[in-house]
Image (cartoon, rainbow, N blue to C red; front, side):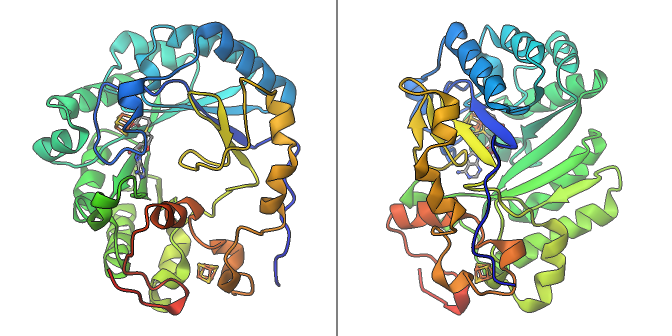
Length: 342
Ligand SMILES: C[S@@+](CC[C@H](N)C(=O)[O-])C[C@H]1O[C@@H](n2cnc3c(N)ncnc32)[C@H](O)[C@@H]1O
Ligand code: SF4
Ligand code: SF4
């Protein structure tokens, strides 16, 4: 049945709250590269004020993100305050600053965290993170988390540089007792990196590798391909395989992201600013009329509106397409049945 409308909830299902732009790594593909230099972040009183606003707006789940959230000296105070307000907490962290003591502290506030591994080969991982020693640090951080019973999900920003390594990464994280593997397709952060984007054939190869991980490493109970892949990007014979891995996106309906400068956008990588917390309350921004374009599905491309796969695909990742268009890059894609050249 044709979907024409998505009702937004009275509060987001969860909020991505970026505590800082600062980071000790220098991943060249990161969507926040300038932030490593600028390093914007709010002070603790403002972070507490925002958390209180989220609580009053009816939010109950927060994912702390960054930059690197654990780089903040007041990170523990933030967890204590947020837990006092009753939030269910989770975070994205590169895990490289996690000691046994911090892992124990985290275990009091979070059941699980999501961390990043880019390659099973130490030299490759260090090259991609721009920091020698990053691989050893993340492996140590994961061990500390597991020793303190914090469940670990691993996100791999997947590009042409590492999609063929995904099985080895699965093997590595299985040995580290991580419970989930997320392969998020690389989203273009710079036109000069367009060769990192996976084409249709590479995406299908990735799907096969992820299913092999799911099959061969039963302690990894959750294997997924978020940052959803559009179904028409792959062959029909792969649709059933993709259904096992794909996670339809909540873009524009169920999520809100708060950037380190207070911008509220529909997702972590989106530039569509709905308001800023320096000028307005979260509740006011969440209820602003600017979100209506998402409720009426006006952002969904015309070819998707009467597609049979729309209810599971929703046009794939909105931000993936937006970043390519904004940067004026031409890529090879089979989306909408059109094959365009590089
Ligand atoms: C921006 S990082 C912040 C948290 C933490 N520093 C970390 O690396 O996990 C959150 C996640 O976004 C992923 N990421 C960064 N840049 C990306 C891009 N251009 N496309 C897709 N994922 C990206 C990272 O690999 C990481 O798993
Ligand atoms: S560790 Fe995370 S925030 Fe830091 S540069 Fe890498 S992806 Fe970006
Ligand atoms: S919803 Fe859009 S992107 Fe997804 S398969 Fe259909 S036409 Fe392709």
